[in-house]
Image (cartoon, rainbow, N blue to C red):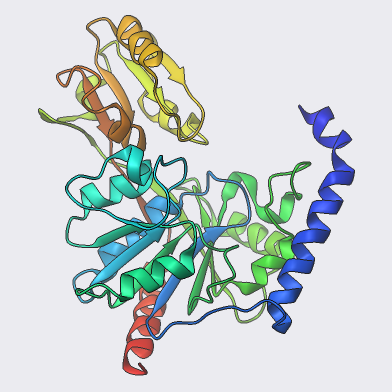
Length: 341
């Protein structure tokens, strides 16, 4: 795979040139960006997946939902529907996509919608009788047809964009220069004991602009596993033989947190659509053992596997430090933008 990526280097140069021309056209106004009279926060990355966008969006929901009517607008990756769709009681992971459906289930008081055309999606949301007061754009850093009021760029600690290269040689969707559009950069999935010295090394690698602020966050795993039949502590599963199932971009930390000596593991591609064959494989592997999966995969597996066996591990984004400063920047932006409407 590494050799193939090196062979494809000329295509990476071409792809980088095309994306740079596109960004330049937006920067000077040849291609039009649309602004809206409502606070809009875009959360995204330069790389292809695995940076923790959903936990970051959920962090913002928890931070802001008590004071604002929030809508989350996503593309709905790998969904089986088309166009604009507003989540309701009839929605499924197949119609919305797994991550939007997960947010719809966890936060029923907010509006969750999907539309590959973010401009159209925002216009549809603003035409609703119950209009949102704030829109969170999920995975929209490269969607420049819409100009958000505030940009949060995520980059994983183990895979910094500054150490990466453009597709297909690397995993970047655009040049590293795209990071300059961010108001805030969050280094995600950090070790919980990341020292100040190591944080400073990251800052030196990222080479951020003077007006940008960098924060460091980690994925906080819950101490309990959840299911349809209730919750149980993770500790109670430590000595129990179990099957771990994941279909996420970077599952190693999930497996490492839960795995004991005799546990079996099934690792599927990110956003995997579990087929009947997959379900049967899981049942055969598990036998009567507990099946533990990620929160994102649970929404696809729920109802397909025995509910007395199936559990998921909740996660949250947690800042290593300076969370109050991060919160204030977000709250100040939303408050000021709302007052200026």
